[in-house]
Image (cartoon, rainbow, N blue to C red):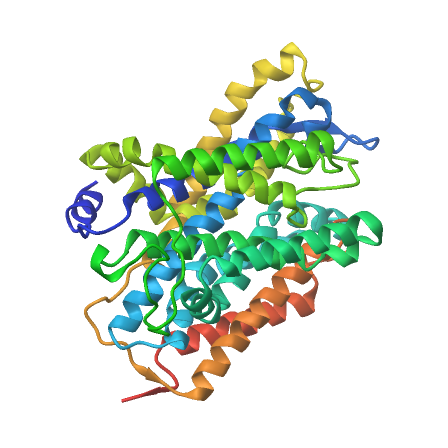
Length: 466
């Protein structure tokens, strides 16, 4: 508590506390959303299995328009990445240095998860565990890495995409939305592979809105703007519009987003649910569809409408300390929440007390409260063990002048990120029934460790001048 008080007292006056609140809320909703819709059953061999209850809860589909909060995560990620990049450049740093610094907060907690899970698999295999079952458990525990792949890609593209944003503004997300629409047409009229680009274009579009929100929050004085918006520092003669952030704009975004999602789902071809529904051919989130981007637009409107009350709340010490505490370990919470479910299911199954009520029955609903409480307790233990890795990674030495890098250092930083992203992508796309004694393909694990090792070496200061 003392450290939280110190961090709260040192909070800069200009910090956008609302962004930190949104990040904490988004991850918390992901965690409780995954846990809430989990159905535990048994396969023909008597082994405990799990699946999503959404296929049996059709009435809940519209609720996923709020429950699908990954757009919020990418929106606040874009804001935070723009803020940290501009701060570092103001201190004389470069894009490569920013990527290397950012990797500590993202890659180190992820490395901890993968190493622990791989070590557990390496111990289970000689003890007689089936490699297929090892992979299935590993696959379930690493489902969160699906979204981390896209977010890491957005991070590594932040320097060039932010430069593009500074020149073209809102034209960039509009162009990305157009590409998502073309991918949707390909998915509807041909093979699903035609829409794979949406995994990048869709999340980048929301990430770019985060850039726009940051620039709107740090707008220059009115004398430097006109009706068309401010000149950009990159091209002083060029005017571009800023993202409107007034309450009126919030109402427009909310109404427009809801209207578009109704047209695309109720009248159009896209599913109403914004989360994965078992056995559905189309999935709005994998890859992101126009319907999901419409939901993101509505969520942006709601965020703008709630900003005033939230900022007044966050000026109070208690709520702000709570937000700080969650954000210190927010990625750890996200990465380990499904491992917590595996551990709890295994423990209850081992002592013969694992309930397996049918979905949407009175017994299933009654089990939700103790289920969530028990999972929260298990996750709290995991966060207590592994959270310090992330908390230490998030400490920045803001008083030091960033070291000057070399072209080789920049190339190695990009190569390190590329290896990490490629390895996580291979893990996520490997079938869960594949026999993998270490839980994930060995080449993917080696590539990940190589990429993470390169980034760690660069963070130690290798490749700097002066």
